[in-house]
Length: 211
Image (cartoon, rainbow, N blue to C red):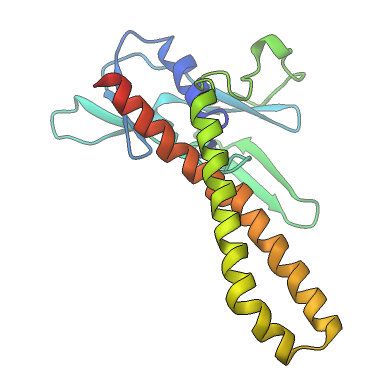
């Protein structure tokens, strides 16, 4: 699975090599099986590991005309190694050193591992290379909604929780509880409410523009 930071850029690079269209639905890329797809290589410890088309393509209909890619996005700032990178290789996992080693097995169609240097920046997929720009209006409205959320939660706390806490807690416990509560509210606003509000506002603005 490829980090969503790079996934779209990687898929576009793959389909630049073939003359077929593809669709993307619920994290899965659908395409024709007939195209001459390229091998995709990943570098681990200055060694290139190959995933050939037969490793990352899977036929989903009896006619053999439609396939899906075993290259899927994950909403994390990291990649998760899957089966396409282990096909035709022996692999050794060393949990002590935190390393994985590969070597083609005797019946493998893949060549011995090729040592290479880190690719130049011109060949590296950049974060956000294939993503859309941030909508300024949606961002402003999202922050306004986030501020409203924080205000309402703190107002509710002042009316209901604060009197109860002051009755039942010592001064030290009250201060620690208030600090923890305020921190949780602000973090929730920044990392949960704001992104959700932005998505909702951006979708609404996009729908209005299309209409």
